[in-house]
Length: 314
Image 1: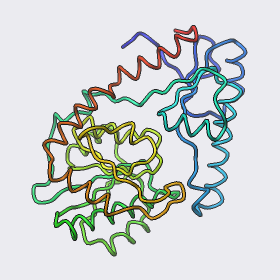
Image 2: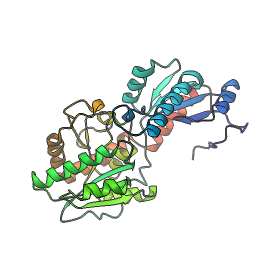
Image 3: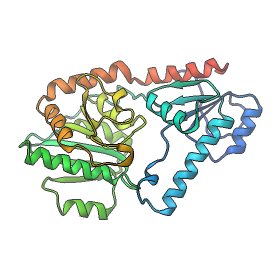
Image 4: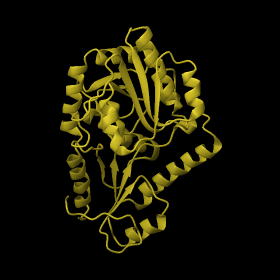
């Protein structure tokens, strides 16, 4: 739409700039681009950290640490500019590896506000509240988010007398599903991985998105939900304080050290969830308005293009 062509082959000779989403194993290709004097912007997520506090397995731990070192090497030696997904991510990288020696920007993710919209089928259950959890994968230590979601759903039903069900989108092992189903007092619905085009429909079918990722960098699921008019609930960790404001959702104090995975404050999370569920019209309108004001695709694109233009590209 803006007149730029995009490719993914570093061996080509006709590109004018490089955007590295996280990292790449094609370090020789980046070296060649750098030697040609081309701008290389590296967009950084958070660091891998769960392997340092949970027994995620040797293979997972090695891959996570290798990923951190690869990202850090590109940041230190090859990138001519950095785009952090949030102020939280910027602070995290600077604590771990020191300030960047090249220009750095913070750009929150954006979403197509036409595709992700409250307009569309509204198939929310009429006899109970649907809590939604959306992640690409709930494995490698992220299963804890499911445990917390189930505790939340149980507390809402048993302590707040709010009938609920829990819908989970993302990859979850059968063993974990069976373990949770064996002790769940609320209906559980496992959707598995879904095509991107299904997410707006799923968001519109829920009453509340629980963002389960602790110390999250800038979760797309949160921004997509807000754009669909779905309020968001989360603990006050990571970039979530940057992404939520007003009545777009509610943040609850974690109640311990999230970096050590201390037991969370389920009671505080439950109270925040109940407020949103009992005031749906106000929170849904605020969620959409917040997305329109802060998370449009055009605003994100403008910020990326400005970063390239500052380096004499495009």
